Length: 419
Image (cartoon, rainbow, N blue to C red):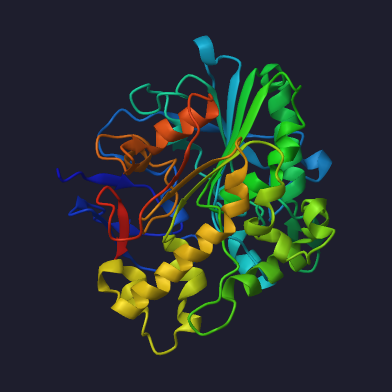
């Protein structure tokens, strides 16, 4: 395998020497490995060094403030739009940015001084790669669509609607979502004949939460589907027997007032925290939905299953950073996590309209990175790359419900390794 060097553009995190070698992608980082945004730092920000990148400028939604649709610090929300052309001129792809969550005043106050909580700190332009690329050889089905990256600055997967006046925090994710959709409809999205809502990580969760709302924006003659990448966060028990992610989500939902914006079909019979977990939402989404997820999701291993708070003696430290350093019992534990994931998607997978791609990789977010979306050595299942699987499903060229054999059988993975 050729050694490929990459440029890493990271604001909150510092990485260096990201190299493709021996099937692993290595990072050196200077922050705690469970920092919430650790793995989202790559999305739309890893690109071939020296290549001809498409950089797309930031548009602030000028009328958003009048609707109370503002970032954590009260600044205007924004998006990056690259116009489509030709056969794609009336086709729209909306990509919801990921980047963890904030679950208490302390983490939200910290966040509002970053690009994840304020448009003052957002990059003025970002590279469009992977599913956002404008090159047919990099993005065969969506390259000439109108492609939008909606920036994430609320910390609750675009679902909150509350405020904390004392801490000067605005929790307005739901309003940001609505204001952005209204603005984009006025810029031509109302004429769409095809539309796809996508997102990675916290944006993948947001895609599931808002999928049917998105469908409702368009007439029934418009083909509308949704793609959740690395958004299947499981309500899992961590290595200490606790529920780290459930505790985190409890803070997010309670602090940010997300309950009223979660799908009512769920909140009618389950508690609001359970309804922030996609496993309790996916079977009731009416719009066709594609779930793309690594069976050994790197973020969930690091921040939900084996975070330092659940591993005070550091038994999981090495395994958490590099799967090759996991002991046999640890791998067995992770196989249990994969089994949990497969059980969660059973009912979802029965619906003909839905799509599924679960690969046995230690990875997180695979649509927005060129190397995992569509390249010569991209991950495949049954010889089909992710971009082609998603395209086949979206355009009804083929049904796509593929689940990889368990680790370590897949040698096409781009595993994430931290050191």
